[in-house]
Image 1 (cartoon, helix red, strand yellow):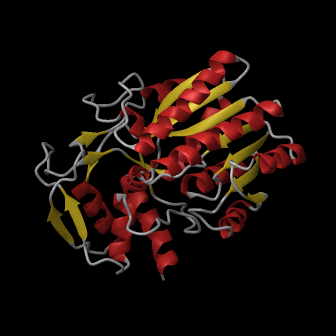
Image 2 (cartoon, rainbow, N blue to C red):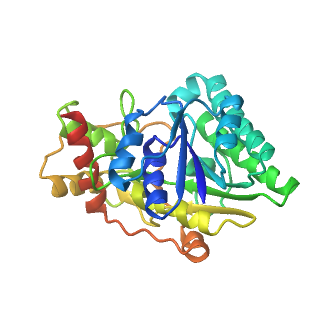
Length: 330
């Protein structure tokens, strides 16, 4: 099978491309390089021995999509291409709605034109918004609290409506929790733009001496150590979830991908220090508006229906993150 991976040089897309190639799939990548680098395609080739063709461009470019589908016999798509900064989405909603939602419509039109009706979509736990459920299952209320989450829910709706209008489509929606880690080779990993909005990239930048300390935002939550608890999943485990989704594509499926347990900010910091031997300077700071005390997945549906389970430990998440970061920031 030949798989079109949109956003395939990005953080999750590149790791998924590696797992696809290692599983015997052929891969074609389209990426506008807005949050990645063309060299990632070569690094994928170094890891797997197979460098996938890379089309540098945007899923908004329907002529380019038509070219790709004409030049390759694509069997299915995995759709990662989207802008993903919550703060930027709130500051520039038109950019996010145009890029994420219109880009998805463009991809769907190209797929329909060329008779390709199999897709796995990279969604997000942000579609749940602020949920009181612990853990959070797929049937939890959908109520995003930011523009980025709204675009993900709109994209889910597009795919769901497409399936209901034409049951020949096979659509799987994967709702991620908090991916961290990197490939064990150290060749690919997460490269945030500007000030990291996520915990692990911030920690690695402190470890690399790029930032003086980590701000722990909120130390008075109702959690064992007072800091926020989240479901952190190794990006390789997450990538392998896409392989399972492809192998089980049938009708419309919606699955959480997470470990099913939460780790606090202090647990992550302590685990990173143990894995790397580097002390992370921390300062306490006030809570951020809208942050929850505890947020983690019920991943039992993916376990049962897809035969997927996480394998990587928290130690591996931390060690792999640092292995990539120290090479990248040197």
